[in-house]
Length: 622
Image (tube, rainbow, N blue to C red; front, side):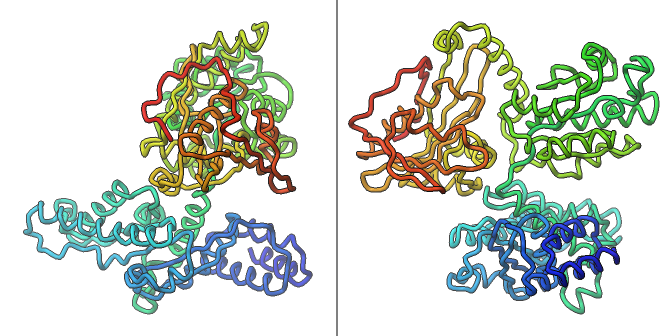
């Protein structure tokens, strides 16, 4: 690391813009507090010297709490930079967080934060009664502690609409009370555990738990504490824990508007099992509970199966004959993953990068939503060169580490898990059946008619907010404006009288697509503006577009709007909808490099026919 620091100093001296990627690499390689502080100082020096910085996502972040927040703030800036964030910080005073939150004219609200991190002191998370108090009294105290913190979070959100990162509590690490600590909520250990659990269960959508209980357990209770630092400077824990907290804050802030990866693509030989199926045969591979390595491969498959259950699409790409590989997957008694679990299965002898490109085209997904895991460094390097948008994980020689490598990549962490996630694989497989039908149809009309489509249009409800927020933050191709919103921001729109929000669900004879379209409309005098219109690419060109614009104009007429106006904001990925508005009969209003505006008069609009049967409008918008 000393050599890396010397190289960074030289890049600052010469004004080399390569300093910034070098800095990010150095951050990712070292979790030592002293090294991180040196890197943070170098980042400040580079800015002062005018070293050209990369384009980063700006965020106004406030840090509040019952502890001294330096040097944590300096570490957060560095961790944010490594995560692609340009963080402008407000740092609260020591233990002044309650006053800063409750005073409407405080400096916190003049700062107008987008995200607020709250670090409550654990000395206020104790049971004031004695050990002989009733369990009912102890539970009331847990609820009161939970409610007081969440009320502070509500105050923040009501006054500045910020997302709140609420830290929960570290657990005591000493032997005090012995085994009795778990037999009563009156112990600090059990009381904090109970409060932490209640905070997670009761947190509203705009509150995101920064899980210090987990970070402390991962680091180790004794390694997370430093009593001398508390007495000397009122730090929450050890220097190592401060690095963990800074990284977690940056990760949570970045994930507010970045969706997790969607597709996990696995190699087979030496990845899902030990050995090479083409050489060793089914009886010669290592898989199952008869050997430590075989058990490790099976445990890796079990973890991958759990990803599928929460909505990750699984695919496989292998240098094998298709029938040999498929026979192993469906025929070996210890296989946990079967052919039905994969939405795509590519076996052959060509470059795996080409297989990944074909997968992306077939699934209608961008390569940047793919994660590729393989044990062969040559294969990983080829993918990195020829499919650079794919995130690659090179597995090592020890299969017992595979599960932890994938879990710790944090590439598939969900913000919420919805009912739609559990059936996502089935829906992509149903889509393959639809595509097969389309290849046999003689014309588009006969194909659409044969699908026997039915749609449901509903006002956006609170129940659909998690799924809607997922779509808003991950839909890139059929997305007219690509406006990102958090779950809390979507919930606010549901309650706004100035907006009309609706969703469309679609089913056909092959299965249920689920929620596939989200529209957010804003009424401005006599004009209804299409703020957001996004749709799943899986239903592109199946007349959902026509059904949607019919509904938009109907709502406009119901609300007394004479004009519907929509914008197309071009991005690197939404070229497919560039001509959507003209195709649907809208007229060009104005055009620039950054956006194009269109409008249509409601009185002149003619409802467009579709093959989609409108099954219900149980909660009719407008």
